[in-house]
Amino acid sequence: MKQKSLTKKPAVALLNAVLMLSLVTSALLIITNSYQQQQRSYLSLSNYYQVQTLLKLTLQERQKKPINGIRANTGKSRIDHQHKQIIIELRNGYQKQFPDEYEIDQL
Image (cartoon, rainbow, N blue to C red; front, side, top):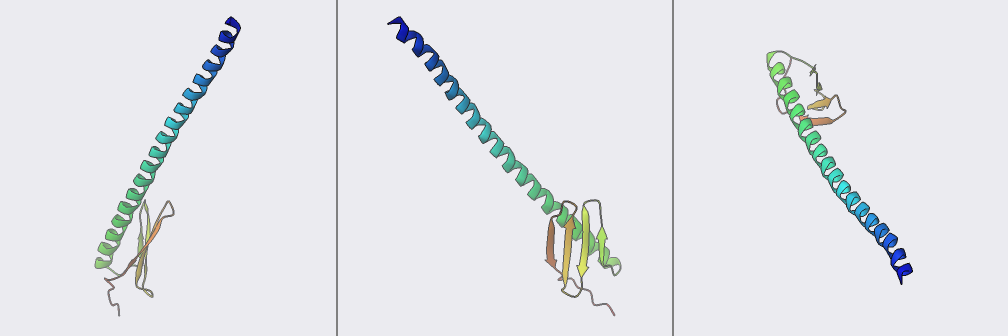
């Protein structure tokens, strides 16, 4: 009788250890997934605001004098007069195009 009891204890301990390891792994996966989602959201917001800032700066500079684009610490803009687009490219590789509704006729 004692022999069976002694073999059950290590099996139960091993089963408990596996269960705890599974719970810890699940918690870590949930935390990692949440962190990655927050990181993607932050990157998306950061890209949006950097692009908007570069677009506004480009439009402001173009009101002062004819330009083909600007360079900034966060990226650069280029005005494509042929296709009537303003192209913003950030340093991290993100690129966005806007229709150039404010095309100034230059003689």
